[in-house]
Image (cartoon, rainbow, N blue to C red):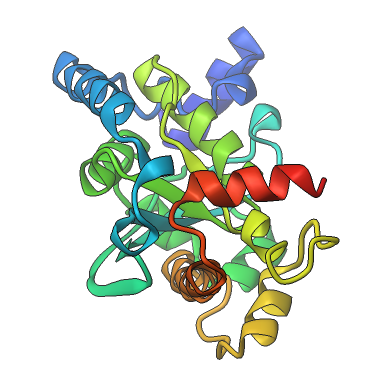
Length: 244
């Protein structure tokens, strides 16, 4: 039985493949993976990033390319890109990138947008492998993303489906820092923020390319926060909470 036939078979007998998009075909997490994640979760509780001086703050800026916006309706992650930062310093040599295996065909629109092909996804590492390698790269650092709700929703779904545990990494949305320059701003597209900050737009809609663009945005506004006089994220959050 071919992969497509197998998927069709399971869809017929259960009708639930879309609600658990990484299950079965991707395999189950082993105890070693679960043990590692639990260790990370304990370490994250001790990582008080809110009170770390901004110039010492270590984060991993990341981006996901997905097949759509709704993981509960069957959309899935097709690539993950990330880069490490300390304060405003971007660690250009400390990056992560991987495609994620998918047996399903991409829509023409997503393939054109991301420049990812079905053939590449069919030969890519399984989702469990990619997720574990990503967590090993991130360790207990806080995550940063632009429009982070998208990334958070998919990471929660993926982590639960594959590891049967909750996704507990803190994700900081760059959007909240934008309000330092204009308190009325709620959110802006990545391209608009790059133009606002004078950041050249390169390799857009590639997970690592977008992660690097977001890293430059994070660095730009982190510098602004320090220039204003904020010492840590807690002070920034407390100020922004007052002007809602």
